[in-house]
Length: 214
Image 1 (cartoon, helix red, strand yellow):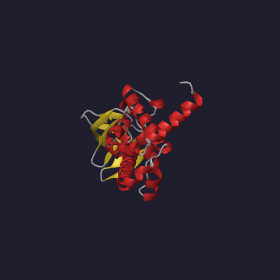
Image 2 (image 1 turned 90 degrees about the vertical axis):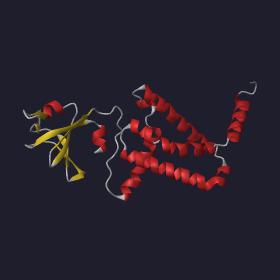
Image 3 (image 1 turned 30 degrees about the horizontal axis):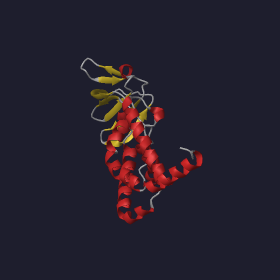
């Protein structure tokens, strides 16, 4: 349901069903009646849920529904929706998709799918995350092992939160807001992993090798 709402739509309901119609096609699908209720045009496509079981989603491709519906609400499509996979209700599927969810939370949007100046700001922030992760890998500070408990707790908490957000939230704007708490644990630990002395030594070596007279 969250994915469908992020993609926008016109939502109608009656005592038995709750349905979502394409936002841009709603005028041709939902036919208004004299009493301000709506009927669905035959042959239409929409998504449906049973009122007594909202967990199961049904895609109706060729409707012959004669029921009457009331307008519930309408939502314009979000400007930045990620295509996230609908998971099966089992632990294996959850574990398999978690890495993808974490990557989406940490690195979306990229510079290649920026749609506004706000996206650009977040994309630059994501480039900073990529940079410090690379630096932490290349210039790992072994002294961080003295704080093993803090590091383990912070990273596990951050990754679990990122996985949960990435699995359940399809809108980039919402992801950026919700991931903030995780970043408060993730970023300081990554920065602590970087050995500044190694960076300075590598810079000095590079400079002496390629630019000895500067």
